[in-house]
Image (tube, rainbow, N blue to C red):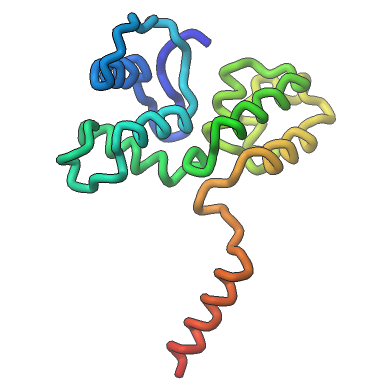
Length: 171
């Protein structure tokens, strides 16, 4: 993967500047390579969390800039907030059988499509490359990658507590 920009459906973020600032803040003496590759939204979110984003809403104590807080707030509303390293690695391993480019896998992890129509917008020449496997691929995505917070299914406990609170307000 050439280039150092994290691509999502609504934003791009310079991975090199984030990594450089992180290395200087944490005292890493390693020279960062300019072609280190693109990062998933999860990796950026994980780095921002490790630097204190989200713990200090006033931006005074944390070692992140206001723009990094905005990136953090955005990523907290995406599927990245529910992902883990293990989930991402498992998904990348499962994608090997579909012969996808690294950039396509990155975009699937970042955008977490939930239908074949969404997959068609991410995978180049999807008709010829995926053929009959598109539904299987969408199922793989649904099984491995957790949905963003806005698409999560309410649990039975949450549904019951919402019903109880509606009854209490009605009384």
